[in-house]
Length: 347
Ligand SMILES: [Ca+2]
Ligand SMILES: [Ca+2]
Ligand SMILES: [Ca+2]
Ligand SMILES: [Ca+2]
Image 1 (spheres, rainbow, N blue to C red):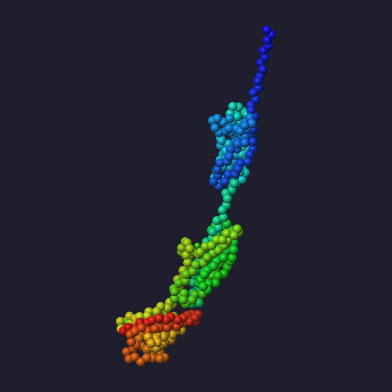
Image 2: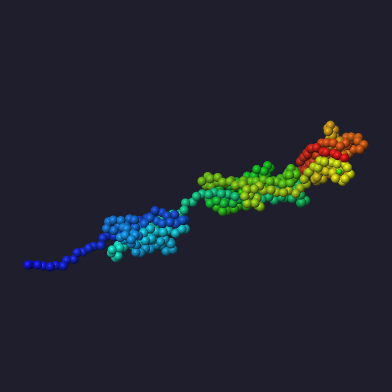
């Protein structure tokens, strides 16, 4: 036998392992989330790698993420992005090694894309109106012709700047000034808008003035916003009510001449504040039975007796019955006013 034995070496090479770079689809950084697997395009021996399972043929042995980013590379190749991560491209490198040949490894750097949350325009505006009475003659009373100053506090309460902001107030006779203005997010303006109003006798007789303004503005993209005014005491849309302490004309039209000290005269509350006045009383036939200027409820007052330019001769005064009064007076602006109605005379 002619033999020869030789020992040969069969070289079994490790299969090629290739980690391939990639850029992930973006993850919204506000809620955070998890990326697709960075290993999704990596191959072992030309086939996609299997990671993160017991049957896997590769595993991630190490990884690095940007310092302070909070990103975590998971065993399955995905990357966890924590909530409130700033938007940007994060470079993440990782190493995969073959399970059967732990030294058969490949390292690559990929990019994790974190997106900023979409900003939805939520425009919003708010207005507060306050009123100040100007007692211009310093008598402690509201008089016709004195003024009210209105101030407006406008705030951009939305998340986008507002432009061309205007304020309207439907109160007849009010004079608005100021604006239009622009306001950045969260900015407040208390000085640009104001209004002036001249008090009328009707306002004084009503005892108050109530009015509500509106503010309007728009975003750069043309979305319009509006708000009705709140008053200082109330959160929410409410008219601003200013109480007027003035000489209110109030007529007490029941006159009883019976000596009981109640309703012994025709009492016109407040008339003494308006001395430029005339009071006329007619009987049911339209005959003038009383007419006096400068009525004042005291020495010039109707007590069931006919008085005036034309007097009716009645020995015991005027008879019981229904009469008709006309009160004319001029307010502090010399504007004439008239009140008329029935007067009931009993004895
Ligand atoms: Ca990859
Ligand atoms: Ca006054
Ligand atoms: Ca409001
Ligand atoms: Ca009486």
